Amino acid sequence: MKINTYAGIPEEFAKLESAKVVLIPVPYEGANTPQSGASKGPEAFLEASEAMGLYDIETATEVYKQGIYLADAIKETGSPEAMVKAVHETTKKYIKKNKFVTIFGGEHSVSIGTIRAFNETFNNLTVLHLDAYANLNKTYKGSPFHKACAVYEASQTTNLIQVGIRSMDGIEKTFMDEEKTYFAHEMAVDDSWMDNAIDQMTDNVFITFDLSALDVSILPHSGNPEPGGLFWYETLEFLKQVFSEKNVVGFDIMEFCPNENSKASNALVARLYSKMISYKFQNEDAEDSYDNSFDNSYVNKNSNSKFEEEDDY
Image (cartoon, rainbow, N blue to C red; front, side):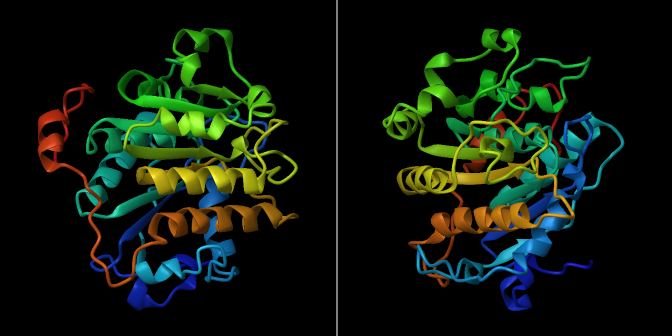
């Protein structure tokens, strides 16, 4: 299926030069998982987006009128390292074009590249990681680019806050800040977890959302389903509060593994993306100019401070 614009929006709202939002599909799948198909996630998400209503009842907005540019998919499959590099470079390119950059994967290893780009362009960054899995391995099966390592780098270079965690390896506790980790079994009996997590965030927040964070009863089709996750309105309440109280600078959504025999998960991920960008722009008129607030002096000063590879932009 040839998809030209996000959600089938008119071309006038889908041009790069005028769009405030950029959506980058990354149909990457490298690791063996209990449910395969993450490489098909972006296309299924885009198809489902065309079938949903574009008016958001809760915010009383049509966020697509802010402009949403659908970028070319990143299809680098040479190696996990090459994929991360391509994602990093492409994400950073659009950030520097003053866009609100969003990424839809794909396997969670994609987030190594997205987080790196945002961390190099926004000062004092918080990474809000919603997931069932800690993903804090320094290396896994000999590679630092495995999905099980998705936020290890973030744990070393950003203010990492993890929400919904309910599965991990013992070695990951070595890199985990338990004061900033919200385990699912504790969240279930603690009404204050949302406020506590937000209080620990800096002003600039990047959200990496692995769909296994959600309970399998509402989204069974993630790469690694795990019981005991977040429910729909609970998730939206938290996200709405984060967008309201912090400067969310971008987000990614990962690990959607569509099932041809069930389209309910497709509808959920399409609406989740729409809700997140609706929360971001609910108080802005389409005619308002947009400033993504990235600091070019910070980029130039810090682009090589945390990573070995040189950036060439």
